Image 1 (cartoon, rainbow, N blue to C red):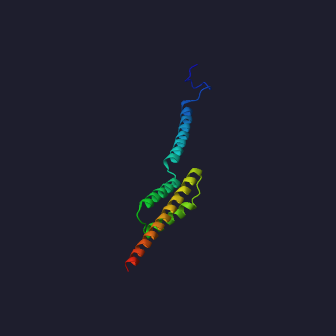
Image 2: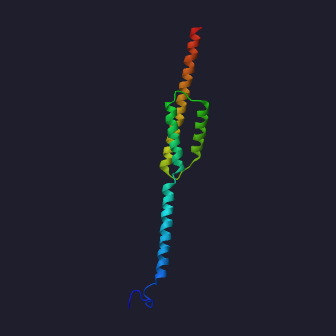
Length: 127
């Protein structure tokens, strides 16, 4: 008896093999697509953390801060504090970035007030 004999009940006909093969291919394609979605879509929480870190660096390097920068920084910090992520490493990094940003803003506020104080004292000394 031949393997290709249609009367042999032990083997599936070509059409059934093809259907089974296509079913597995569809399943594999769906699994690959799902895996690519998880890999390709960046975590929005990480983007927010990176934004906080870059802003903190820019504020630390800036000679002074405008009112708009302070307000935008404050809004960003409030948005990031509301986010509760599923990744504890991101939460720790977010908390550190928020602390760094608020410390940088406070340092600029302190430096600005000292500059104003020195400027006003030098004006008074000239009187």
